[in-house]
Image 1 (cartoon, rainbow, N blue to C red):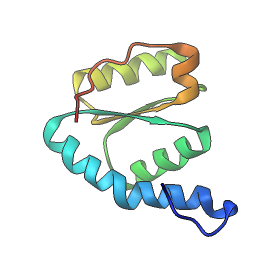
Image 2 (cartoon, rainbow, N blue to C red):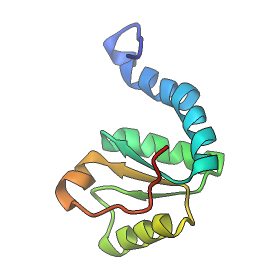
Image 3 (cartoon, helix red, strand yellow):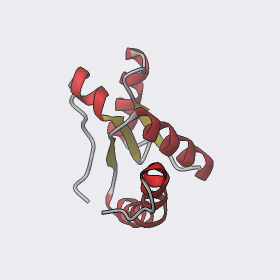
Length: 107
């Protein structure tokens, strides 16, 4: 549960909590144990997290509902081969496309 002062700041509070509390622990664990798939509930959250990971220089691939099929295939292959550490996936992408996402390790 993420604490926030009002409903308008809930979006920012969730992002801050993910970046400051969850992701550092996840990054430390997945760096030693393998790859991880991050399922992101909304496209706006997806864009914020994608941009943050780009700025941090972290290796990742992404799949969202707007990603073209050749790019999805490339992202899945990079993740499966271990060339990227994270695969960002929106829930809408997973619901509508139902690709088999292989290569994740149980962290």
